[in-house]
Image (cartoon, rainbow, N blue to C red):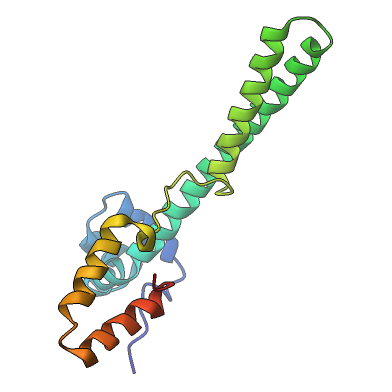
Length: 161
């Protein structure tokens, strides 16, 4: 049965971690909080990376929320400006406002992951794959069992064209 981490169970765990992050030597942390230096080292090595990763993810989410809030505020201002010119004959301003609204919506979609600009490649339709597949099948022609196994494997991961 693994030993329980004495730092994780310490009532001043946050202070111990903060001291390490602030650059306090491990020996001084151990003495100050009544734990062994080895316990501090083990905790930092085994538990702190996961905690720092969670903190980094939370910080990124907060930045994204802040950015999203700012873009949504910009969107509201853009909509208000467009409403002011819509009843006029100022068509360049109207179309510019529409363009800005669209750009803002694209940004919101990218931040919220509702819009992805990552290209999709359908390998099974790619001419080089089709040529390679034909070469493989032809090379396996004398080896009927291997040929059928390869074709079965190909069909199991795609539509087998």
